[in-house]
Length: 113
Image 1 (cartoon, rainbow, N blue to C red):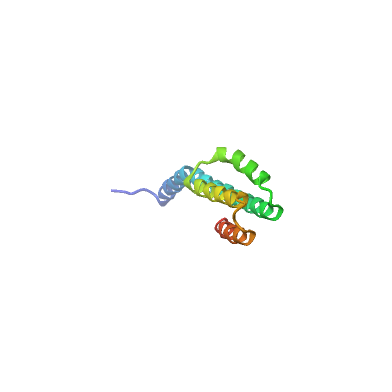
Image 2 (image 1 turned 60 degrees about the vertical axis):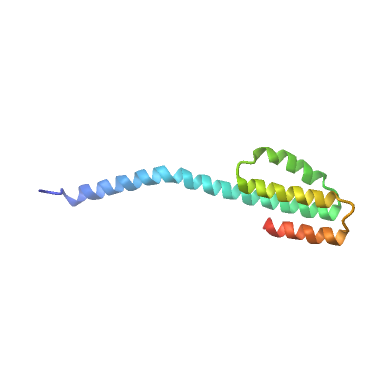
């Protein structure tokens, strides 16, 4: 019984590897794209929260929050949005002293890093 020449075995192995790469590369690319999107979203929210804290105006943060809320597609995004919603509530609450607001917002910003 002959197992065939080595070149045929190498060709078969190369074809199997090519099929595996073709099947799993889109999955990997999609995960990388999702990570980039989440990272960018966190960076934008960090910037807008800091700006809202400095200017004592949450209109830009609220506008971006409402618009971007439409593209939630994972549980990680839902957690981020719930934190941003808490930040908006803290910033808009007139009963919380400014120093307490800053401490609470810093905790939220730390999570968004």
